[in-house]
Length: 183
Image 1 (cartoon, rainbow, N blue to C red):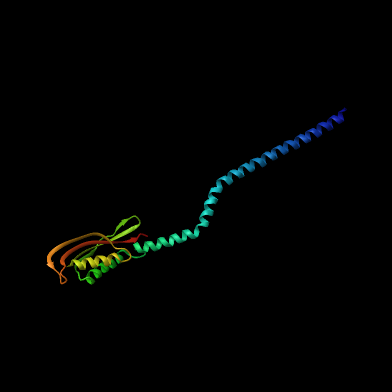
Image 2 (spheres, rainbow, N blue to C red):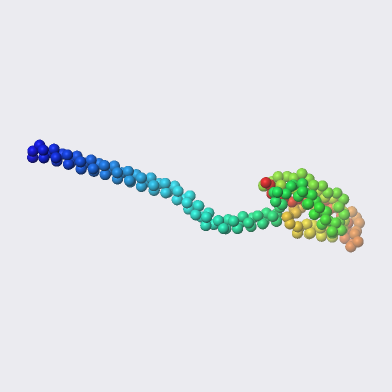
């Protein structure tokens, strides 16, 4: 082999070597990019699955939110109602139930609202006198009201007299409450 052939052979070998080296680094880049893509997909896949689950159950979530809102409206007053207004309404409701049942209300007072677990507890204290059967009717009527009326305490004390219907006349002291959503 002469020098010219040797140079040509070395030149071809170097060119092939460079092409192989370039192919090796290009392949390594492609493999690394693929592995990085798999890692990113592994991180994104749980989030995407949660998103798809939320999207698929969106109607159920809306329905549950509506049912919860309806249940809350049975339990308490909405947050846009003023606490003083709700207290006055509760006071009038209790007085009306007592008077309808034939029980005379001697005093009633709306107490300061207390905050608890996302609600304001609005409390009314009441003193009344009347036949025991009337008090029972009033308590039953208040139990059926919506939003719910909560009986915190009911104290009955006999007066020693009897009413027109023959039931004993009692002094009644009670504390009732209702809930209002906090804003």
